[in-house]
Length: 277
Image 1 (cartoon, one colour):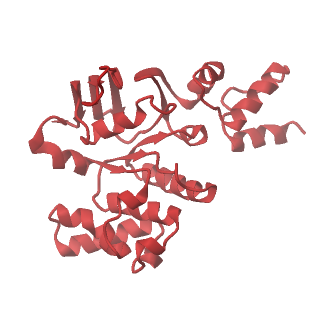
Image 2 (cartoon, helix red, strand yellow; image 1 turned 180 degrees about the horizontal axis):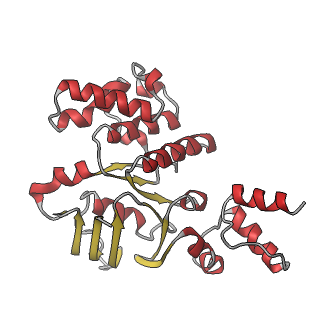
Image 3 (spheres, helix red, strand yellow; image 1 turned 45 degrees about the vertical axis):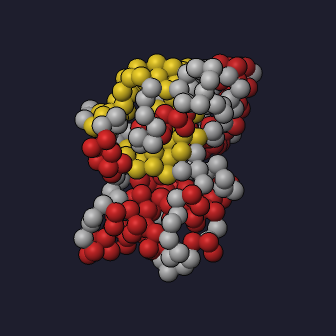
């Protein structure tokens, strides 16, 4: 399968870090085109720093990061990289630049030099994708947090990247807003976009194809959600939560019930419990 991201022996240290601590310590990862990867870890684990290195907002201290064949260290390819790998940030207010929703969504394509007719098609498509068509003439400051985040996502979608990196996109949202944003992320993935989701919500990570657990700048675990949640005790040692369904599954296993370890979400747990009747 084609690799869209290739990280080779990535070491990153911030310039003002006097103790020379490695924020990322010899990280090597490949990410398949069309996949859905969640990267999770406690604060300071390095997960957001990986995201910014992929998008070339940060550059490696040592090692290399490639998006397709483009090395993020090559200045001449910076816009090629950012067109291939768009990024959505935690706070949508930091990403919204215009006073009208549709103008904000058009901002990225305009900066790419796209023709006006194509920009119109892209804006229409992106707003439909995030279910914000009826808000196109609204000022963003009049929207809810979840709606603002959907506008920010539309702005990236309008640039038609092959990969979108979501850096804790639901961290500032209420439960309803988080659910709406995750629905959009999953729909974009179903349509073929490669998704890299940085999150601290295990329930969100459980919806990915692959979970990478970061701890102190290193990769602690890497596998499918089922493989990761088989090691729930290790996750707790890392001060990470597990989804409620996994916690209940483990308690039922300790009680001697024959319950599959594939049960990691509420829907599959409900189905299992209903079958016990």
